[in-house]
Length: 79
Image 1: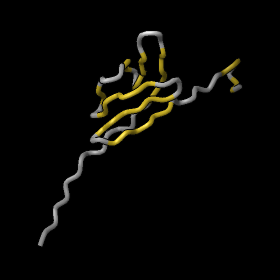
Image 2: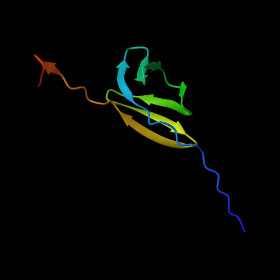
Image 3: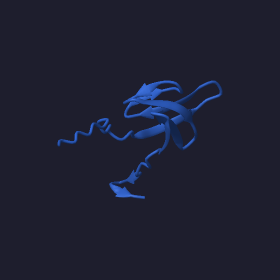
């Protein structure tokens, strides 16, 4: 007897580089792409954008992705 299991291929993790909150639009920079709520990337739909994180939905599950902190450098040294 042979058992076969099929799974959805794992997607690459989303990298939230920045969020932009304006008076009219809320945008997220994900992997270098600018998205607004309702846009899709790698099978994830952007649901909400907040100051330091964004919420994505895939297959009915919500995932919160936080902005990755950037290291500041001064004269080649970290602050």
